[in-house]
Image (cartoon, rainbow, N blue to C red; front, top):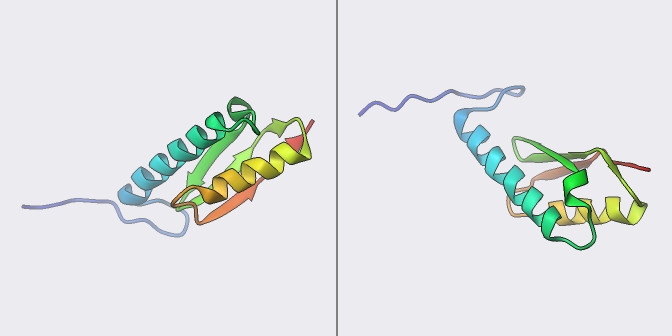
Length: 87
């Protein structure tokens, strides 16, 4: 049996990384949507090799902080980059 996969580098994801990152993004989005402390639909989530980047605008500094804390608590999130602005 021959298995073929794509290896990643510092700037590209392997197939396994891509699948894992997609699953992590989905978990983070779900957590943000379920939280009463964040406007989950207003927050953009992107993941690369376990680093989760949050972006777009939120209403308050507390919402920004909560989104970062919620994201950091998701299993698999290695690092959180909280690039959200406050309106």
